Amino acid sequence: MGLCCGRSCAECCRTERQRPLEYTGAAVLATATAPATTDQHGRTMLAMPYHECLPWKLSSLKCITIRGRVPERPFRWKVELLNGGIGDDIALHVDARHDLGHVVRNSRLSGSWGAEEICGQPAMPFTPGQPFELTIFCVDETYRLAVDGRHFATFRARSPPSRASTLHCTGTMELQAVGYADDVRLYPPRPAPALALAADGGGYLQTQPEFPCRLPEPIQDGGEIRLTGRVKMLPFSFFVDLRHGSQLYPEPEVILHFNPRFQVNNNFDIMVLNTKAAGWGREQRPEGFPFRAGRPFQLRFVCRPGSWEVLVDGALLVKYPHRLSKASLDAIDVRGDVVIESVFFQPNSKDLIQF
Figure (spheres, rainbow, N blue to C red):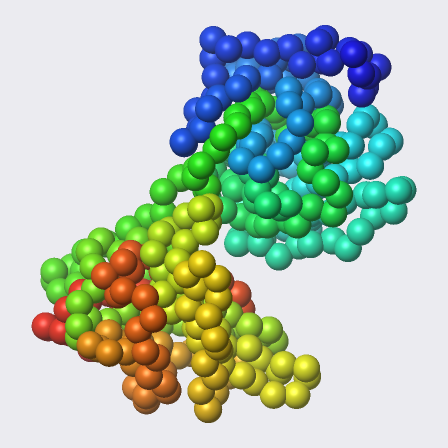
């Protein structure tokens, strides 16, 4: 039996099936155990640093969940997947740097660190003094990370995931439980929130929305989706997806992909619209670019019998023909260099609110 940390895998991978962690749409394989203590509040904590062999060869649709608590005054802590033991290659390095306010993803292969990835939604999803649940979902040669059931970041594997054999946790974090599952068919674990009914009952209005968010009912001809927000300073790009499905896996159909791109090749701004079914279709690139760094905007998607009308600050930008059925539209996602302050959804043409 192979060794990865000075112990046999039988010793290292002790499991307890009586108290499994829960996974949506997953077959729970095992809940890892290790020497544990109880703090003054009665919370169970696993010994740190934590080092344990994975109970299976990592591959698509397998999931690792780490539950813990961030102390009141954290500094840094990390969760790693190692291709062996301490000192070997690090397939995935997740480093919560509370002193800098962000989470770094990286890998170390053949003794050299790769390029750090820092962007996330939000930059620091872990709160001092609060519990957390970190999910690592492996699919299609990528690691998808969720915090408290919400997708946070994606990290493309830089070495085959099947080589990862050990979970390693260390730093200023209280570790409470580790769980493993395979055949996970839905990610992220927590359903996206639905838009709330407007106060006057005329449509649905959500301020400071979380994305993706679900539409409570189908859109009809004359209905619209309206977003108000502002472009961040020094933008690169952002996108708005009107789609079928609020999950990231299985990949949803994108009924309308709206993607402003700033200073492409340090030269010009372009607007890209597209649709994704089995794959991406042909791009449509309209003339005009109404977005400016730091400026507020109102973006409207109005459903017409043959097309979507896209308006920015009241002016028609483009008509985009229906490529997929509008009846399947049930979610909105927004990512990138933009701050969305509110989302308004009117399923039909009656009593449209003007604001």
